[in-house]
Every structure is written in structure tokens, then in C-alpha cells.
Amino acid sequence: MLINMKTLRSLYRIGMGPSSSHTMAPRRAAQEFAAENESACSFRVTLYGSLALTGRGHLTDHAIKDGMSPKTVEIIWQGDTFLPFHPNAMKFEALDQTSKVLSEKTLYSIGGGEISDGTIPKEDEKSIYQHGSMEEILKYTAQQKIALWEYVEECEGKEIWPFLYTVWEQMQAAINNGIERRGILPGELNLERKARRFFKKAETAPRYVRRINTVFAYALACAEENANGGQVVTAPTCGSCGVVPAVLRITKEIYDYDDKAVVCALATAGLIGNLAKTNASISGAEVGCQGEVGVACAMAAAAVCQLEGGDNKSVAYAAEMGIEHHLGLTCDPVAGLVQIPCIERNALAAVRAIDCATFAITSDGEHSVSYDEILQTMMQTGKDMKSDYRETSSGGLAKFFKNKFFKGTE
Image (spheres, one colour):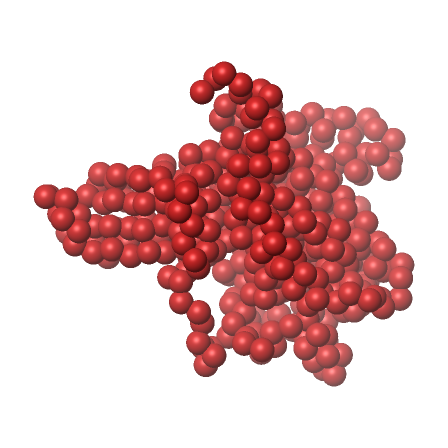
């Protein structure tokens, strides 16, 4: 198996929402291309496929223009054209004063803020991680008698911990900011923020309901911050940024864990997300929301399972369930905004992650479907899914909600 698992620094990215693939990555790609072509008088950027179809709602054009400021940027939308390598394609052109092309480059936003030039990694390309599958990792950690978070440290080095502490701090900041803020989210849906309301209701709810409502509030807070263009952490994407923080926060509060234990769980969650990113996809445009919220649920389930005393096999089982029960989940954002159904999905997936962890710990850790197999299944399911249901806003809720509520407004 080709091993090309990158550092967790490439998975957990701190940046502005609302989309890691449609906002964060295009902005960075634009900045880099502009820096490479400082002599250009202006730029032309052509967006293809999913980037074009949902780019306006995701503020892709604004992100690119910000990245290339103060130069003039012309945006061309080609939603009917899908390039072979990935649905999120963008062509950058540097122009002189007569609009002659001086330089051009085609790049792809492949999920989680990652950019690719469309080339396949070479087999001899160095990987941060020495194993490329959960099966291999479980076998190795059993032989070495180490936990999954210790395996992360072995591969990444001790210098990964300051980074993960920063990630955890930003996750908490997103929760805190989201709970404090009120009002209407930007965009034509006029969607009201709900995190603060859920948090306040949790304070007077019965004990069991209080915990669930608090998880809802934390996940909604992050997701609403993202929808508002606030600063969040990709876990593994901006659209699914609320699941892991919410689950870690409520678990820390219930059991009074210190930050070190939480950050170790964050490392294990990152390993789960990294395997999904490497061996399948975390791009909604490629595999639907199963690759975003589904993988986020797997990451959170693994983290909670570890915190509550689960061994490596139980952690892998919890992660597997997190994806298995999100298989086939479509990416159908209404009006191209990361709001409906994205925000609520974060809240529900957070609760499901806790359930998956509890189920895995209660069992003996043995299970029929492995994490590697569920990743293969998710990838194939995504390939079989019509493009209407892969972040194009052409089907599902995006189609029927629009027909009902925006009829006659265009």
C-alpha cells in the first residue's frame, strides 16, 4: 500500500469559514499564485464543477479576490464542466496590461483546505506515518504495547503537542464565541443562530437532557461561527467543524479531564481523520457529506472512546461505526450556503459519536467491519453517488427547499 499520510498540521487547519474546500483552500491558492506572478497586471480565475456551482454561497469569489488583492480579478463560473482529477478545480491565469496570458496553473481543492496540482504522489515520497492502514497500525501498536496517541507522537515527534494545544484552544474559542453571539447568519436563508438558546435551555433541563442539549449547543456554536465566516478548525473540514470540539468539551466537563488528556484524544481523532483523508476522501464534492460529517463523527467517537478507557481495538470500532451509520449521506447545501442542513448535522453527529463510543466500550471490541473496509465502502459509495448529491446544490434539500421557498424570486 502506498503510504502518504501527512502531518496532522495538514488535517487540523485554523482559518476562516465557511468552507475549507471552497473558501480556505482557494484563498491560499490565490495568494500563492499571486506571489508567483507579482508582475501581472490582473488575474483571471475559472472555477469548475462544484466550486462554480456552490462557490457564490460559499464566498469562493470573495476569498480569491481577497487572496489576490489589490490586483483586479475576473471570475469565470463553469459549473457544467468537471475536470477529471477532482470536482473542485480552478484555473489561475496571470495577465499583462493587454490581457495576454503570462502564466497559468490549474489546481484542485481536494478537501479540508488541501490543495493539489493533480499529480499522484510518488511511491518513494516520504510519509510522516510508517503505516498506511488501521489494520497495520493496530498490529504495530499491539506489538509495541502503545496507545494510538503514543503512535502519533512516535510518528510526528513531541513537537506535535504544542500545535495540538493551539488547536484545542481555538476549538474552545469557537464554542465560546458561537454561544455568546446572536442574530441572523449571512445569506438569503435568514437563518437565526440557535446555539445560545440551546445552551440556556440546557441549564434548566433534566440532567440527561441537559447533557444532550449542551452537546447540541457546543456543536451549533462552532458550526454557526463557521457559517458566519468566523475562525474555526477543520476537523476534518469547516463544514463539519463542530462535532469534535463539542464532544471533547462535554466529555472534559463531565469527567473533569485535564487538557493533556483531551489533547491526546485529539491526536487519536486526527489519526482517524488522516486515514480517511489518505485512503478515501473528506471532500463533500467527491464523496458527499459522509466524508465530512461522517468522518467527523468517527474522529469524535474515537476520541471519546479513548478518554473513557477504551483500548485501541475499541477506539477503531467506535470510529468505524461513526462512518458506517453515515454511509450515503449527501452533501446538498441549500443555496450553496454551509447552513442547511450542515449546521444541524454537526449537532446530531456529535451525539451519535458519543453513542458510538459507548457502544464500542460496552462491547468486547470485536466487530465484523474494519475501519479500513468502511473507508473503502465510503469511497465507493461516493463514486456511485450522482453529482447532484455531491456539493453541487442540484439535488436533495438544495433542490426541493429552493423550489418551495425561493419560487419566483430568481
